[in-house]
Length: 189
Length: 110
Image (cartoon, rainbow over all chains, first blue to last red; front, side, top):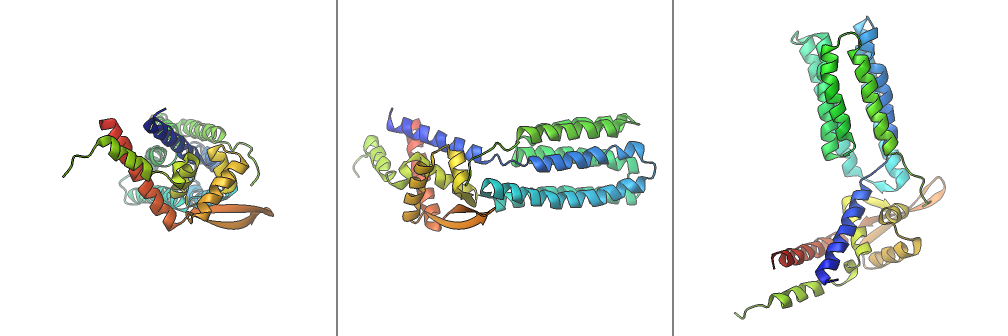
């Protein structure tokens, strides 16, 4: 093989290794959010007192966010990879989503959006958040973003059980991602 | 100014690539550590799919040359060795990769 050919082969080896190092097992975080969404979205269909829904998300979202940070740093420490800069990108990404949802809430208090509209709009923004997280942080989240995007018209045009169906579908998509990214048993340090 | 023979230029650039980062495993170690702040011995071994002895030798060479710094911690009472790229390592990697790209670019055009 020529020198240039060997260099190309070496670069391909380096690129593959860099690609493999991107796969950090965040399965526990996806399971956590599958559970949060599985309980949270159907509330719109079954709970009459809407204040319970507001309180659920006011508590579940920040607690889930903090738990995700902890689980993420634990996963990185367990596999032996410290990614502070990458971790901060995840934090900023989801923090921006939470700020967007709070701002959507202002539309309701300002009378510019109905209470039921906030759910659908939040799901649409969630679809974008997952899709962009897939593009920039973890490619496995791209299909999840698409699945959530498909749930938007379901919530909007299927009154009664649209939110429940969406909750089940989104949780299922997250569980599939969690299962596919499950950590394989590895040698000791 | 005398004309430069492209083959001679390429040869010179190839020679400039000789050294520690010539080996693909050592190059990969430095690239991985430039991408992630710190990696443990076992993670590097897993990602590069290398044996303990082989990766240990490469890491020691890079450490002896001042490209890497190490930190030892404990996790569940087991020692974990963490590796980090030093400023010198980062500088050498940048220069090596830019030479590499220039050479490949020239080969593509030539």
